[in-house]
Image (cartoon, one colour):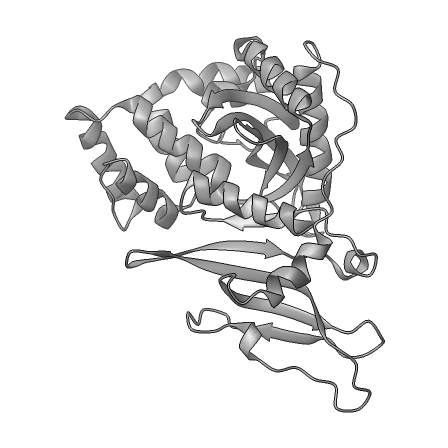
Length: 338
């Protein structure tokens, strides 16, 4: 069976409503989904099966499918991503927005676009197209989101057969900020993140290139933000930090794991022999939601050692932002300290 034959079978066997509900289940983000569903007056549940049934009931008694679809899009573009950010001039951002609005998504035919927001079920023995495919362009209120399916063919280990892995990545441009954000899902293997940034950027340029000539997108180096955020005691609590010196010596690994009262800033690290000063090179900061909600937004700047030795951190992470506004504040926070 060819990929074309598979695409003729799968999308026609399920209604759009069921695609939307299944797409939410495919995110594997139950807690975050419940939080966003509750904000939009949908039912919540502690198990996926129960949630699926509750959402179907909600839609039968007046909740709109468009509202649910918006929640699912928000989970897909925001739940847990690595970010590369490109600063732009006012005119550059305006031109990018114009080009995005001109794109006809319907001209981008693929099994992955037909199935969105569901992930495609991959059958053994079938050959599928790998790479990036535009699935949707949507105005999220705070900005324009270009959502791409990315399919990799990977081997989990040397003894296992190759398998297909699908994720959704996003290129996002805010309405009120002059920047472009490439958001790569952290559900993919960490070894694939750098190459995924390159591939999504290239496909995005191909998509808007018919309306606008786009040059090389240079992402912000956020290395300076790491020490700045660690030193600022008003910035959440540091759940994890890697401390090093500028000289040869031992690294200090400060990890609070799941302890909600832990902050690495409260741990004293010192070199009793050479008196070298320890500096934070890698951290995860947690920000509580407040209002008795037991959830946290995580901002992470976690460069590989070879990168921090070159004073580089070309992407950062945001997980479970409590709102689109707070998500934007997190990006601004990093940019202003870079």
